[in-house]
Length: 267
Image (cartoon, rainbow, N blue to C red):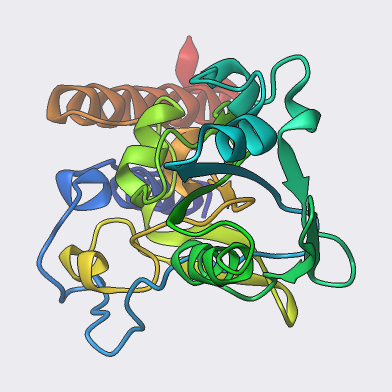
């Protein structure tokens, strides 16, 4: 009976080890859907970011009239530091308030919430046009950022451009670790209906055509560890070594148990 239990324990341990191996199927990106790799053919494609309450936007006026430029862009020039939130930036940027509007000098409230950057730019140009002819507007969203958390990959990153795909976002955070679960990446995303949790498989090539491919400002990307990380078997030699060690341990346990059960045989 003791011999049977020992054999059974060794078999169970070997099965667990084999199921815990990290393979190329587990970690490779852009794999063809199938065999536990999902397809996202019917997913929603990327849509432009829409302004929300609390966003801070940078606005610059371009006009043929020097007085107009001086009025709206006084001291601004091409100061990128102000655009990115440097000292004094509050003087040249505008907060989207609870009313859904920004308060623009000499114009008043301009409703921009729910609009894309392009739509808000057109709205602002039309609002300015009656007072200042032949003017154009440059509008950008400031403080665009996302966060990555989980398994040692925590980071808070400013978005260097408007559209960033999930692969570039993770590269900026240091990529996904060997023992992180690429099949269950979660994104916490703020929407007009509240915070939503979206889960997707980073290994699927169909990800390029899905709503998950591009991240949005304020997204939180959560990466969880693989269940298999306990054993950390990543190569065939490591697997062989672990199996041999397991057998050796089983033989040692069996021999010791036999000696204890039959002390007369050890003499």
